[in-house]
Every structure is written in structure tokens, then in C-alpha cells.
Image (cartoon, rainbow over all chains, first blue to last red; front, side):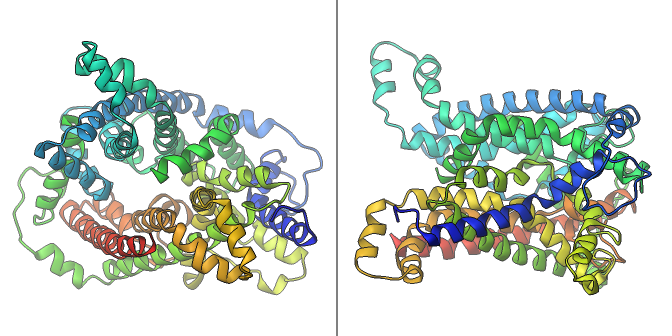
Length: 273
Length: 276
């Protein structure tokens, strides 16, 4: 177990080979995105004279700038609301033993099972009646409602494993429930908050179905919808499309690479809870 | 709570009601038609096929993704030097927008795509084909893309489970002289039970609800060869205006998810208890 033996070396080779297979699509993505459209050699062979023209053209013609801003706004606002609502909701749910607390918890868990397709269509009508169709605020509303159950679930699991001693001490010192939450519980929730932040950011940023429904026909777009529209428009110009795809994943990948270690640990830890 | 009720509970309940109507999504006048949508579904080959595809995809993804994820986790949980780099790299696809990876693969799998040209380069030119254009293969290509994207996700969860196994247990087993397979089956597997539960749950529900990848890879085609319940819901509601029918499909989807979750919960819960 603890020595670097020959068997370990073989395993290392095998794993690196597997990783290369996994990385292959990304290699092709980058390779074609920097290639001049007139170069028709095999997509596997390295591009001989790389160019950045595809990126500038994709950026200008795809309306990617606006979509990027929309995606950032939608994701940031949604995630803040989700975290605030979920952590506050989870606190009484995890601590109170009253019957309503258990019932409410089960009701929220129902939200984990109901597929969003069921709610998305009737909600579409409500959103339309409210005149919010085509506005990014309809998305914020949708995500806030959709993601709260899962996030609350994470928080409740985490809170149940935390000792109550500190809050009880705080209450004895004259803290009300809200200030006990603010000054005592919230700081202890930090690890799970990071996990929830990352999980929610990824799923809100990546969602495609909802903005496709709620924003279709308007000038507002999020990144995934803009990319889909772009693919439709430049059907066979794959060098341009690949440049657009690459632009659209750079923000996510940048966040991922920066926080990579804590994201992987957080994912694992959060889901273990 | 109010927000959740407004966005999920109320619309879901209304959804169930619309499933029994002939509403087209616009007309304020619509009639309650009872079970007609559901009986129509039973006679609709496209719908039945979509249900079948959904089930095949969900099961295939669950089995393959978790199998690979587990092997990867066992691989990077060893002493190999590149383990941290490999973990990061293998997990990376999971954070990329699914619709983007689907478009990427649509090109890779195309007639002139990288997969075919790679096959040609390594002397397997005979295997070249239009992967997404063949109704027999297209469904499996969707599975391939999803597995490629999320195997790393399964890996990370398994890895967390593996790392919670105390070192002493491995050592004790090694001293007892048990081989790697036996060690895995009787020691690691039971301790991994929570990770297995979560992984199976996530991938089966994810597989049942799958939309983005199908939409971007094949659009449900060729013909209806890869339509799933989700893509059919979208088409019926927004290109055919059959809102009531579409919602009825969503109800069926919900039922499948609920049955799958409940069944899984029951079985895995028992296993987990037996294991601990």
C-alpha cells in the first residue's frame, strides 16, 4: 500500500491513458476553435497556424457579451437568494421538534422528486400573465424556488450534525433566535455554504431548458441559450461554433480551476452529509 | 417557503389538473376531458417509444457512469503520483454546461468528426460511421456523452466514500491475506454504501429527466429514434401547442421518477442497514 511499486507504475500509466481519452474532446475543441475555416485537414491533427479571428467574430455576431452579463446577473442574484432562504429555513427545521417542522420538511423534500418539467409549463403561463416572460427576473424567481429544496436539505443535514451547545449558551446570554442564528450558527455553517454556493452556481449557470422556455423570442438571453442560437445560425461553420463554445465555458472553467480543490472536496463532503 | 410554494408546489398541482384537460396553452376556454390524454398516450407510438428510450437511457447511464466512476475512484485513491491532477482533470467535464458539451460531441461524432478521423488514423477506418445518424446507435451516443461528462462526478462521490474508510481496515485485510477482489467486495463495498446510494439516486433521476443533451445532440432524431419524455414534452407544448397532452406526459415522467426514487430508497436503505 505504501510503496511505489511496479504495479503502481502500471496503474499510473493506465490512469494517465484514461485521462487522455477523457481530455480528447477538449483538445479537439481548442484545436478547431483556433483554426482558420479554410483549413480542412483532419480535426485531430494540430493546427499549424493558429488564429484568434474566430473568437472575435463569434463574440461580435453571437451577442455573447449581453448573454454573459445576463448569466452573471441571474446566477449571482439567484444564488444569494437561495442561500439566504435555505439557511434560514433549515435552522428551525433542523432544531424544532414540533410536528409542523417535520411536515414542512417532508413537503420540501417533495420538491426534490417533482421533475421541473411538471412545474415549468403551468408556471410559464403564470409568468406570462405577470408580464415577466422574456425577462431574466422570471428566471431568478424560478431558480430560487427550484433550488431551495435541495439546498435546504443540505443545510438541514449539516445542522443536525452540529452540537447545540453554542446556541444554547448564546440564548442564555440573552440572544434571541435571530441573533443566535446570525452570530453563532451562520459562522459554523461556512463549509456547507461554500458547497451549496458552488453546486447552485453550477446548476443555475448551466441550465438550458428554463431560459429556452422563458426567454424565447425576446432579446434577453443567457449563455447556454445564446450558444444554442449561435449553433443554429452558423450550422456548419464549426470553427466559429467552437470558438463560441469555448468563450461560453471559460467563465465556468476559470472558477473551477481557481477553486478546484475546495470544489471537489465540497461536492464530496456536501453530498455525503 | 412561499417562494417554493409559488414556484414548485402550486404549478405542479395545476400541472396535474391540466393533464386532464385539452388545453392548448393559450385558449382560456378548455374542457376537462378526464383520462383521454392518458389513453391517447397509450395509442401513441411516439410516446411509448419515448418512455422506453427514457428508461433505457436512465438505466444505461446509471450502470455505466457509476461503474466507470467507481473504477476511476479506485484508481485515483492509490499512491500514483499524478492522482491530484487526474482527479481535477476527470472531474472538469462535470462543471461544463451540458448543452455546450453536447454540441461539442455532435461535431466529434459527425461524419467528418474527430472520432471518425481518429479511427482512420489508428487503422480502424472500417469502423467509421455517422454515429448520430444511425437510429440504432444514436441512443447509445447520448449515453456516451452523458457518461463522459458525469463519470468524474460519480468518481468524486465514490472517492469521498473511499477516503472515509479507515486505513487500518485495509491493512488488517491485507495482513489476513485477502486478495484485492475479496477485499473490495467484503470490506470496501459495504463501507461505500452511502456513496453508492447517492450516486445511484443522482444518476437515475438525472437520466430520467435528461433534456439538454438529447436536444443538442440529435433533437430526438433521426426520426423519433432518440426522443425521450422530456424532449416530447417540449415539442408537444411549444411546437404543437398540445399543452394538456404535454403535461400529461410530465405527469407520467413524475410517476416514473417517484417510483424509481421510492424503489431505490427502499432497496438501498435496507442494504445500508444490513451493511452497517
